Length: 475
Image (cartoon, rainbow, N blue to C red; front, side, top):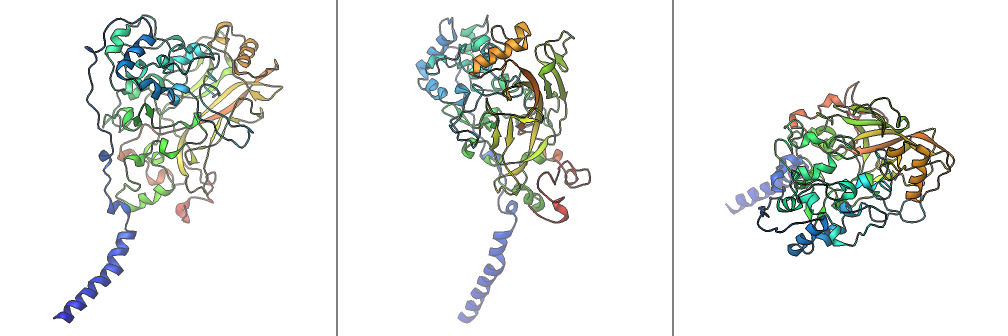
């Protein structure tokens, strides 16, 4: 009997060693772990009604902040070190500059409204501070933090010139309305970034205030607020935009795997894709699903009296192209940038100048195929010095006042500390924006033939493949 039990034990050990353990190791992860994203979604705290807490009248925004600090003494100090307030990154070492540089809305240009320096009158309506009217704005004054921008009911509060409260705002009503930030608060700036609804991102626009499930499954069907993914601790909001950075610590970035497992699919063949293909590539087949997004912007035509139309031409900004159901461009992306145009970088006006180039390649183990919106602009440059120029537009005596390019460019050079030769032209620029919102329900995700077919949306050779990898196998 003992010998029989011994043989049985040995046999069980052999089965474990030869069959069960290898299955556990090599069986698709989706069969080992269940995708339970709700386990990772933050629980919303109970809101404290401030109607009976905040008392008295307020004349300035700073007075509101002073009142907030009586109960939240560390709030301003926390906020003042965030990029929401500084509008500038930490210093980076970049290969093409001898000294470390910083990147942000405060000091670099883009190919939308071009730049903030000298244009604080309008640009700072999206800054979480009060009174940024000059380059010597006091970033160390706690009372310059605008608590209402993120916490007031947007029906009671709006920002005006230089980031101050809009004229006529009832500051007491706004202060008594404060709550945890909602999509309304975040959307006031992020849905209208770049100068209007849907202009900049394409995957963020005013349709997301009250979205349907097939517009964005997280914000529509599941009623997510922005901070469910962009989690916040001590006023530091998780999630960094590569347009205003060069390298980003992965711990600061939002990822699908914050809630989902790496291989969430029932089909093992789909899970094989997650090593080289970002979730967004299949689950965001298109952006600007309801509201169109701007895809081209030609500043060279601005200043003409040919009649304004929001989607084609504005005298103050030039000519545009908008698109709805925009199909993204696809590039390898590891979360950082290979290059970001810095003020003073030389450019070749005979070919497109890249404002940013996403980092990554087929040989980069940290890169995945990722969807982007590409915005193409035509913007001013110095034809003698061969670098891009930032005009003064909204500022005093700027282009929007006099429609005089030489004057606007001279003033802009003064604002940025650049040299302007007096000779200018307009050059083509490209800027990429990662696509991460407007995630579709699973049934709307791309199917195999969207990429693996004669007319597939991926350019395999441009991505570094000799052809469609389904035909030969590969990463």
